Amino acid sequence: MKTVGTYEAKTHLAALLDEVAQGETIIITRHGHPLAVLSPYAQEPETVSVAEAVAGLRELRAKYRVNPGEIKEMIEEGRK
Image (cartoon, rainbow, N blue to C red; front, top):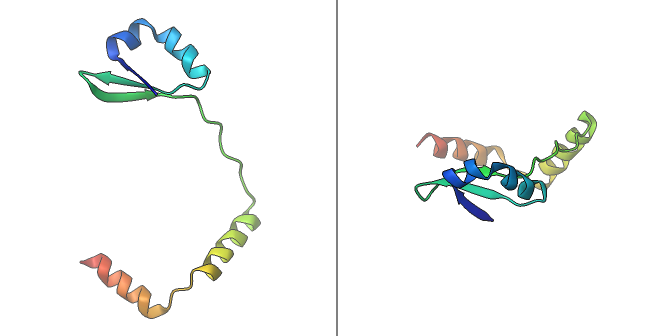
């Protein structure tokens, strides 16, 4: 991961964008502190049907059973 200052980023933006297009991620800093990240654009994730989502949630629910007493304890713990 490459790090550049704001002045260099402004002056060499086209070259930095070429690097990003090749998969490089670049951190832009101001006075040595990270300010922004230039990274390749991520395509939107694949969508799943409602039926697939429901099936996945049912699998999780079956895998991680919690009894009602534990749920009440978790709620009370969250209120502290």
